Image (tube, rainbow, N blue to C red; front, top):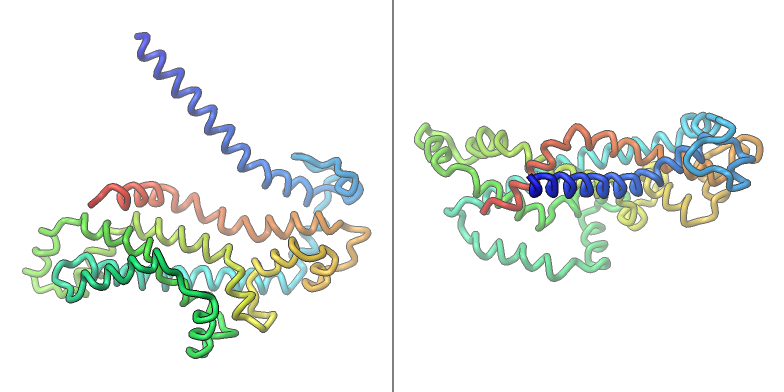
Length: 291
């Protein structure tokens, strides 16, 4: 009985600690929401913490009425969805091939992938390659170069190696080709690890802005993260004029617009996570434990 009570006290303390850690992560979002929903005079006086004061929706009326923000949001959604699908296609095909012991030059290819952990591609050769392939100033430059990650390849390869070899042998005896085994058996059984890698890549793709700064020259092709970067790093009012906002003096302040646009750009990726949570946890555990 004493040991049972000790375990319960430890579990309670652990739960409380995790709740506090979660609150520290949730607090910035709550503060942003409070600032964006408050009246300008309270925000200007630094009187807003975690609850709106002088409730106002003018910030979101301005955001929802700004066409450039919706266009940038559409670009971000497009490169995230298409880029993640490309990454899953490239990663799963090479990982499945490397998991098959009969693949020619399998060992050399694995060694070459390991080298990418040690030596990263310098910026200038990467830029020259993108220009040579005529992908600069296109959305392909934001999706293709980062579509394949050595870390993700090894996670998925480890998962494929953990699948039953007898299942693959039975499929071959029934006349199924390697492509058929990959499409009909390996992929359907890999939903947890696919969801895990897809979430990793989608979050990274959504938050990426450096590639767009380098490769994209047309303003209509810029993702929303570039607008956020300009909004936070550069002068607030100057950045506001770039996204076609109205007069801020009476309806809102630059701080309110920053808070509203940050929430506007963050919520879509946060909404996706609960739908993938169970696959994410299971996939991460399988990818790390199976040999």
